Length: 516
Image (cartoon, rainbow, N blue to C red; front, side, top):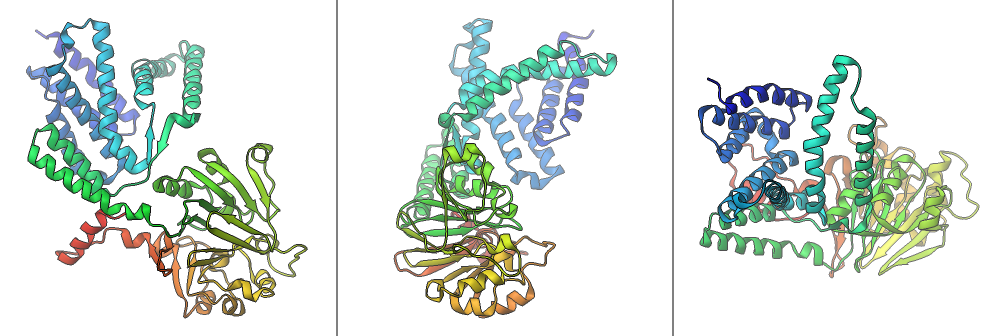
């Protein structure tokens, strides 16, 4: 004779297989599929509550299928959430009188506990990957998670199946209206500035130590907890200089075939020079650094590879001012909300301790050959406590020729090579006048234009050259000594040992404690 549990199991199996296929067999769905099947198997053999074994079995299966998934945010967030929910509910069942509560109250309490458990367990990972703390996350999850999981999603699946069979989606208008209203509410909540806080990044070692400390505390291992907490405190102190260092830092971001740089002045101001195609890299880096406001957003010219990310950045950050060459046109919403400065040669701008001298385009400038838009790019010389960098936009030979009229203002220790290192720029006369010690080329890997051109590389011979297509993002910094230091994202990546190599492994361990 079949029991109720066995009947429920047999009816549930086809549904969860259908849901797995509907999800595209992604890691969260696969994890849930494996754990639910283990739970259902426990029902069939009369053993319940083996949630921890379900998680461990699911983890093992997924890692055997794809070991690299262990390093993906979706894998880590998924298992951290489920493990935290399980621990929270297990603790609640032992310490809280849930059995005495009525069905409605008990359900509400469990939803609250699930939300708290998932939020607490994933918070370190959320901060590590996204650098934002959702202030109202627990409240919104309590409302929308049950609504979507128990109403919207099942109704959508049932309605879709009914539509496939009959050609009619029952209550389709009401369903669409409900989803629309939920989207409006979620969009409104997301638009509130208080909804989340931007926090600076922390190292991978700090992340691992947070979870190690929490695990030891849960298992009541006092000595181990104390050791983990002590190492955690040391790791935090070890990484503080990356935030407290008084000197300026300029990072040329790897945006593919485009330009984007972030200037952090010695007194904490943030200036973004160009955005790349989408602005995603700029947004991600500013979040990583814990920057909440852009004091000035500079657009060298209107090319998509330099200004394409404007709207995305304006959506994500408060921007104090926009600086450009006077040839860009904005929608009224931008003109009404952001101070707009149209710059020309001779303008001097101060942002805290940093100084920006505008060298090009001069009033009445007209190029005689080459690309008009490129040659009208905004050219700025940035100085701040030992750093001098010439930002050249996309100027070509004609723009460089115009700048040679200002030889005493061109000299800079760092040159941002114009137009991604194309053959039409970086001529020898111009390079001799700038006389840089370092040169930065921002270009895309395997780009179709052949940038940087071999002729340009020949002209740059004798200058220490750094390229985003090979090194990733490149940081230029200067501290109290006034000496310039240059490092790249590639310097901070873990290195493959190619076998047992103790020195490389020690360097990799050190990198776990470092911040880019």
